[in-house]
Image 1: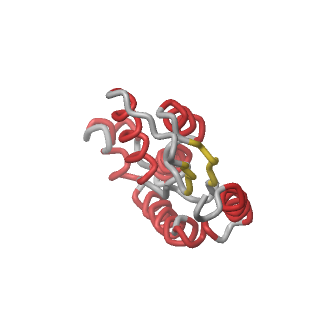
Image 2: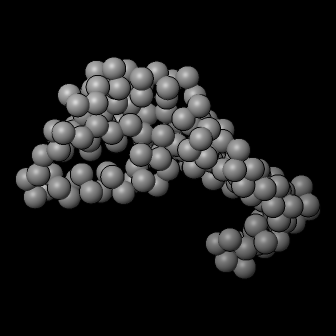
Amino acid sequence: MHSAGNEDARKALQAGALYGRSYDNLSFFSLGSPVSSSVMQQSVIGAGANYLGQVNDWRDPVTYGKLFLSSLVASGSVGAIGAGQSVLAGSAAGPWGWMAIGGGTAISGLLGAGKYGVQTYHPLQQYLAKPQARSIMFDWLKNNPPGK
C-alpha cells in the first residue's frame, strides 16, 4: 500500500473484520503512509492478514503531516510577528486571519517546501528504491514463491 491507500486498506480491513471476515491469505506492506505503523499493524493483524512492515521518510510531508503542519503554524506565527503585525489583530479577522496578515511569505515558503517534499520524497518509485523496502519485499518473495 502506498500513501492514502494505507488509509483505504485500514478502513476496508476494519469493516471486513467487523463483519467477521478474515484475510489470512493477504500480506500488507506499507509505504509512504500517513497512517502510523502501529495503527496499520493493529488493523492488518486484527483482520487476520500478515503485516510486513512500513517504510516512511521523515522528509515526506505526507508521512509526517503533523510535523509539517506544526512547522507551518510556527512559521506563520514567526512571519506574523517578524512582519511587525499583531497576531491579536489577525485573530480578530478569524481563526486563520493571522496567517493572512503577516505569515503569508513564510507560509508560501513552507507550502513550496511541502510541494517539493511530496514531489521529491513521496513518489512510489522513491520508496521502492529504498534498501529497507527492497529487503522486506525480497524476504516476502523468498518466503512466498510463485506457485506456493
